Length: 276
Image 1 (cartoon, helix red, strand yellow):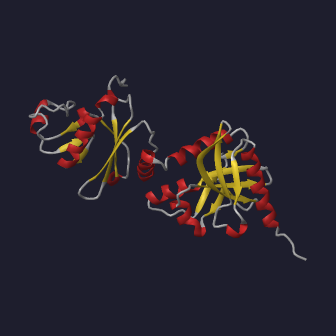
Image 2 (tube, rainbow, N blue to C red; image 1 turned 120 degrees about the horizontal axis):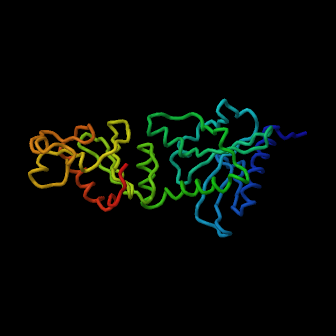
Image 3 (cartoon, rainbow, N blue to C red; image 1 turned 120 degrees about the vertical axis):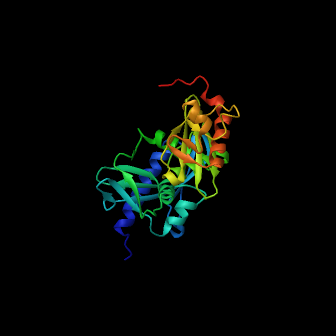
């Protein structure tokens, strides 16, 4: 007599629990046939106010206590790295713990891409014990998932790529400029509206954020040409400086000119900013 493996029963219980939760909020859930399971169990199309959106994710669902870890839960990546990290549709992992009857989630694509930009290749997706998915948190989960999916489109796709590379999260309203110098080092100029400073992110400085201002940009020749840079320095130093510097970082002339252009292009965003 053919028997159903206990592991299969648990996996199906996990899928059923997740599907019931999402469908209770009018989201569309399509189960992937077990014969075509390449690391994802569900397609989920999100709805908003009763209307189906074009925001879609894939979900890998696990059930049981064997996925527990000290920090929460873990899902092994195994042979799915390329499809989870580089696919056109982001993948989320969910674990169902039968002892607590709780679902836990994590954005697998985000974790793998973040690891790649840090020079690592994660072998597991980490699901913190705090990342509970239930009726009280599902709306927040959907908002975050849809925001991540939105990052795959248009200008947001560029911001998402740069943000993953630098380990930060840009808002669509931020003014973000990107440049690659002659040494293939990558620089990102990041200006939030209403802030009196911008942020420099530099690959050669391990992407550590550095606050910068026009007054802190010391550049040879700027004083003689009447450019409004370097105002934080004494006039003598502005007139005679042989090197370009900003916030303690030495720049070559192309980098300094690029930053000067960035400051000029975003001057409007710093108007009426409150300092302090």
